[in-house]
Image (cartoon, rainbow, N blue to C red; front, top):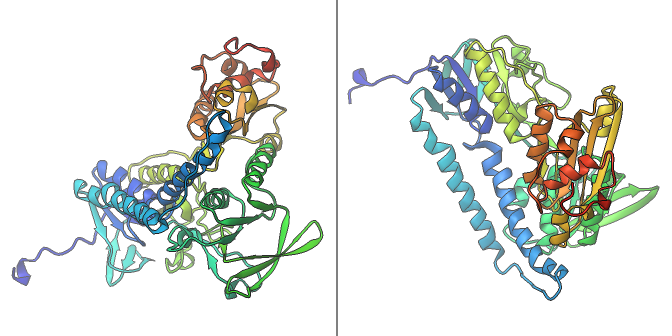
Length: 476
């Protein structure tokens, strides 16, 4: 075709979205479906964190570890025993990689041709520029911009850490050889999930926390999960202070910590950094554009997802908002509506459920007891051990508990957390209860299917006023 007949690449759009992960796709699709012309600008591997290095690969490997553990745990049933082992670690990792590649293609790359209004542009580094976004040598002009570039694992500031073998969550999930020992730095969501997973694969695991395991959860849940970990052979050092690192004699790492006034030296093949994530803002030109960030480097957004620069919005892990993929997609949708569809929507996380895929799973929604007190509520709580839930008794697995928080004056539910094998699938019932303003009494009088984990929410609600241990199985 002659040059005079070549159709030039479009450079002018209604909206430019930087980042092609869950948040970026959500924003682009929302605007495109409303008839807007969208430039979806790649920033890293298409699909972003969740499908490539986060939710999908980690949960696939966690499920494999659960299957491994489940065989040995069968002995809790009279007359049963079992044993499973890792026969081919490389095959397990390859299977995980194939799943990731398939989902990345099906749920991201293959979707683009179905949206005529979206132009996918992956031509180099993106940087904010007057009137739009500079992508390599090309200037994309758009009156509105959404930044959705995500985040990456952060390395903790510990003396000597640069001189020892350290893995982040991405590198851990890509290990070609199963290590003999690991020390996890940090006991948040990622640290808790991956530490238990690796221990179940037969690795000697030590977990070091500055405060406690799952510090964002209720202390009763943190205590219960810590005991589960220790029962599974994981060494947990909570309330620890990092002193420094040095290379080990055999090429591994040695970590010095202080716990309860005593100095300990811990050795392992690798350290695993799970102490937090760093927003991907390098090179975007935020400061020059007048976009404010917090001390972590995250973009500060208002409830409308707008940044401090008029016409520029942000969503997902790059912001100072909730770091969950569901909330990233939700926030991006709001940003798109407010940016180019004359919307006036506001970010609302009051009934946002969250899940930690440990075993037992830990899931929560709403306010913790401490948060409710800080918000000025007169608080009442209910704590129910799983030994009071018939489903747990039948499964011979009573590890865990349920805690509900309610306003003592109005009886309105404010929040709750559940630690149970099926906690992730049970929490949505409580999320709906909070969303529609249910009281503890109303939840306790709601019909639930018998012999389910979610029935524990009803029993926990009844525990505010009575001793459910004195009820027959279905009398509640």
